[in-house]
Length: 116
Ligand code: DGP
Image (tube, rainbow, N blue to C red; front, side, top):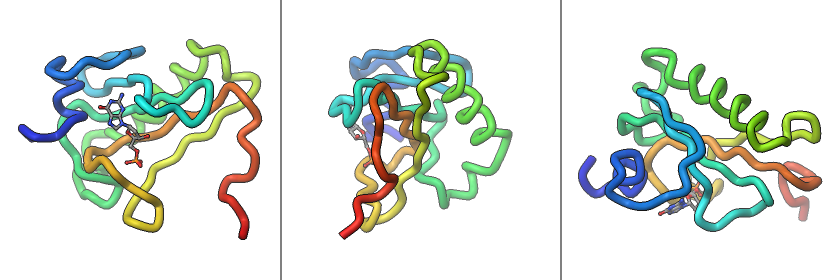
């Protein structure tokens, strides 16, 4: 997609701190990190979000999770632990409409969702 920022990052049209790249998947540091390690794992081909049927083709999700585990090892947080999450829709605050898996870690992350 021509106006998708994550497509532009994958294509090298926009700068990013890329930590992993394969023919199908790219991982780069989040521009606004919520934890010492905050990396986004994205498919190289455009898929809108986790409800897009294309997410379930060609082992896309499987490879994204494999890359997340590999990047967690590379970042030294495999032992201390990490959180993997997808946002979808307004209640989850999905902002960028290109499928992305958040990898968060590097400090105790607390409860999964703030209770109120
Ligand atoms: P989400 O709320 O799940 O859509 O998260 C989108 C994330 O993308 C958010 O944590 C900030 C990050 N982000 C947005 N624009 C850019 C960018 O241009 N570069 C990088 N590296 N991250 C971005």
